[in-house]
Length: 164
Image (spheres, one colour):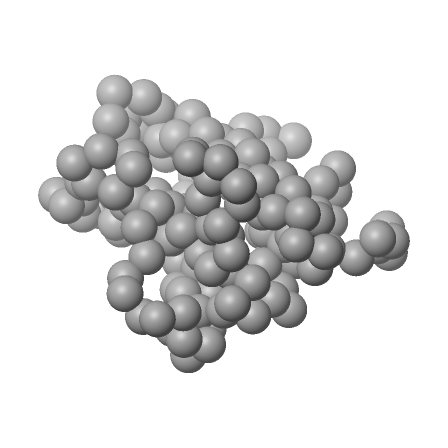
């Protein structure tokens, strides 16, 4: 298996295919806007919704680059990427956010299918794009773990899960 095939497999497992950890899509599935807006105790705690916004932000920058565009709207700092627009926690806005997450992840996965192993050596923000994609996969896994933990704290994560 070459490096690109590993990235493609990691990309699908991070979002939609069960592996060593729950995929992101499962972690955000079936929760309400109210649950997504719940803030865990502590000054540094983010909501699930804020975390999803953060993931979408970095995936969108990666997508722009893979499409041959140079992202020019980088956030001033990382904290800004977690912010949620003032939607008053509406269910419609939460579903829209989940749709954005699904769309950007799916689009990147499709673009990976058009790339060659050698394309992964192109430089993106001072590193090979393959490394950046791998980093986003790990980033998704990390934040998926946070989302699962928040759901466990809420009591909204199943006590037993079936997976293969």
